[in-house]
Length: 401
Ligand SMILES: Nc1ncnc2c1ncn2[C@@H]1O[C@H](COP(=O)(O)OP(=O)(O)OP(=O)(O)O)[C@@H](O)[C@H]1O
Ligand SMILES: [Mg+2]
Image (cartoon, rainbow, N blue to C red; front, side):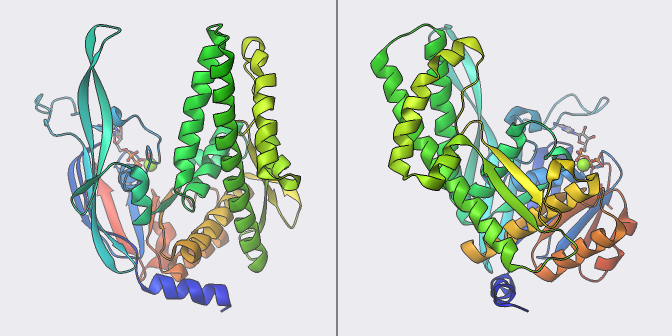
């Protein structure tokens, strides 16, 4: 065991994860209560039995819109045909007792709808928001959650991560960054907000030079901070991979492909910020022609199978899954080393596309990390290697068997 592995072991001795979970009016669950251990938790059941919904519920214990990126209102349970028409008046909620390095906390989150008068439209509109409580105290910044619990997820949608457009890859990358830099979520949200404002202004034909310039300066300043945080995270993961011996899961090489990120290779941040401000001003007319504005909103994230020097998009389906697993495992270990507590892994159908050797190797790795990993599958026979090391939950129509 090398130094890194023994440090990780020291941290994971002090258990972090979900101990108790209660769902109310959440997706297909009127209520569900689970008591869990800090170990692999294998959830099996046929299609539609409610496996992914449990993982989604846990993802709501972290900032953001959960592992499906869902609209808050669509999570509320829809009653089945034939069921009593009276829907429970309760909003959906997720409550949990969690452990962070052995210390227990309660975390709760629920939908809250509120009405606001829309003066322009002259009517009253309903808005949804997610309220969050830690130890019964309401918190105003979801980012606070990151100090208590963190989750890393792999979903079947990510099987195409390396193939499709850049947006899902960029979101994936930014999620890797959030875990280390809680401000990153705020920065990306603020950037997007300013960007939309800027586009609206330009499309409306407004030529308030002062206003445009001030938006561009703010976007440039946020953009450079976003690019710098992404660079730092990529460097952290690459360094980690380099220090670890190659094994069944291929070593990856990660690269950022973005104009602003590249400029930071050779220029000080303040200079890049000045460049970015004038770069945005020069691109104003693009909004009217082709909507293409270059910058941190276009950055891509390139992954290579290191030994073969092969871009991930040219790797086989199973190889791509293995590369994704490599990134997730590196991120998990970096997070333990950096934050001092283990994230919860949410692995939805993660064994799909992996051959038997890789599947068993992944399960061994998860077991050896001594962290909590929620693993869903329709095939219970795939988990024999975890027989004495995992908690097994079987679902049938949203009920625990
Ligand atoms: N708001 C909702 N209200 C009630 N049921 C819902 C709601 N949203 C989703 N569902 C249902 O919850 C059920 C379980 O979904 P889930 O995605 O958890 O299944 P799963 O066990 O992961 O299935 P698969 O093996 O196909 O991935 C589905 O039948 C789905 O239609
Ligand atoms: Mg599912």
